[in-house]
Image 1 (cartoon, rainbow, N blue to C red):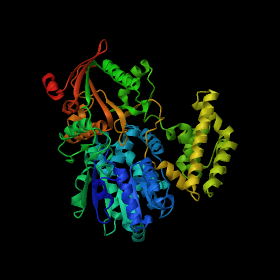
Image 2 (tube, rainbow, N blue to C red):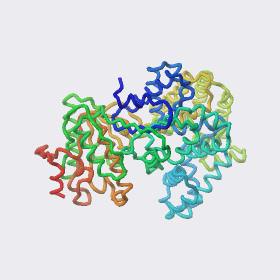
Image 3 (cartoon, one colour):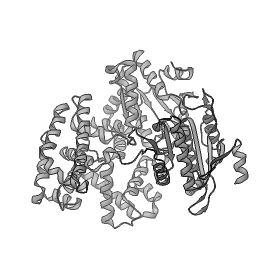
Image 4 (cartoon, rainbow, N blue to C red):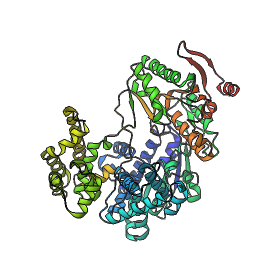
Length: 621
C-alpha cells in the first residue's frame, strides 16, 4: 500500500514532474510503483529508462520491479547509472574504449612527473580538478582560473592528458558524458532512437546531478518532456565533485509545466529525530521547506560533552557497548565521521572494549592489486594499450610503466616478457566469444598461466605463499563475476562485461560484520537503529575553510542533516572541550540541534541530563 502522497506520484502519467522526497519517505518504492503502473497502462517497458547514481541503486530498483511486473518485463526497463547510460549511447555508434579512473590517475601521475610539477600537485589533485571542471561544463580556461596556484603545470598536464586520450582513442568517465552529449547533439537518428528508449525518463537523486548530466537528459527528452526527477535539495552533498543542486531548486524554471509532488512522511525515524533534523536545516537559506512528519514518538537526540578527544572516543565506545548489551545487532550501529582520518581514536577504544567493527569504504574488492591486474588483462586483450602497459609492468621483472610503454611503441620486448605476452595472446584469441563460452575461456587461460601470474601474487603477499593463495582466490572471485554476467547476459561480449564492471559507481565495501564506521557521504541512502556523530567541533565539522564560505557551509550542514536522518531509534551527537591545539567549541551544528545534553567523565561515566540544550550551550559558548 502507498500513502496518498505516494499514490499521486505513482499515478503520474505524462509531462514533467518533480518529486521532493524527504529522508525515509519511501521514494524508491514509490518510483518503482510508478514504473509498474505505466506498464500496466500500456506503456512499452522498452521506452522506460530509470537513471540512478550507483549500480547498487539500479540493481535494487530492478529487483523491486521484478516483484511487481515479473522478471521478463522488468528486464526490458533500462536501469542504469549516468555513466552506464552514456556508454550505451556511445556504443550505439561504434566501439568505446574506457580508461578506468585508477589507470587515468597513474597516467596523469607520469605526466606530472615528466613536467617536474610541484609535489602538492598530485595525480589525485589534478584528476579531481579535471573532473570537476568538466562536470561543471568548463574546459581549459576554467581550469586555469580555478587552479591558478598550479599554473602552468596543471594546464600542461591537461593538454598532455587530453592529447594522449585522443591519440589512443580512449575516453575517461567524464569524457563518456561529454561525448554522449556531443553525439546526441549531432546525430539526429541516434537521438531519435534514444528518445524512444527514454520516452519515460526517471532520474533518482536529482539533487546530485551536474550540468553535463542535465544536458544529456535534455537531449533524451521528447516534446512530451516525460521526465520525473526525484530528489531532496536538503540532501545535496556533492558540490565538491561538480554537482549543482540549483538544478533541482530551479526545476520549475527549466520545466514550467512541471507538476511538483512532495513526500512528507518519514517511515524511518521517530519524531524526536525528525524534529531535530527539521530544526537544523532551517539554518540554511538555500533549502526546500519540507514539513517532514514521523509516524512514531521518540526522544530527541542525545548530545554528549567530553573533556578530551580520547574521552569522547571512550564515551562513544560505552554507548555502543550499552546498545550491544541491550541486544542491538552490531550491524545496526553506525559511527559516522566527516572523514575516516578521524577514525583512529574510535578504533582504539572499540578494540579496547573488544567490540567488533568494520570500516566501510576501505579498500574495495575491485581496487585490490591482483583484481586490478585481472581487469588490465581483459582490457589489454580487448585492445587497450594502456592496460597492456600495466600488465607488462606488473608481470615482467624490471619493467616499469615507462619501459613497457616504450616496448609497446617499438615492438621490441625483452626475453623476460615472453610469458606475459603469450598470456595476452591467448586471451585475445577468445575476445570474440560470448556468455559462458567467454567466461570458461578466460578461467581456463588464467589457470594455464598461473605460473606466469604467481611471482606477482607472491610479491603482493610479501613472499608468504599462503597469503599469495589468498590473492589467487581473489582472482578466482573476479572470474566468478564474469560467469554471473554470462548468466544474466547470455550474449554479452567482453567489452560489455568490462563496461559493466568499470562504470559502476563505487559502493563502499561492507563485510556485514560488526559496528559500522563510515564517512557521512558513504552513509547516504542507508539507515541504522543507532547512529553516532562524534567530533562535532568547530574547525573539524564544519572545517575552518568551509565556515568561511556560505555555500560550502550550507553543504556541510546538509551533510550533517543526512547523517542525523540515518537514525531509526537513537541518535548521539558528541564533542570535546579540549583538542590537540587547546580549547575547542562545539560545532554550530550541535548547537543548532534540539537535543538532551549529558556530560561524560571517564572515571564516573555519564552525568546529568539537560533538556534545553540550545539555551545551555548558548550560555557556555
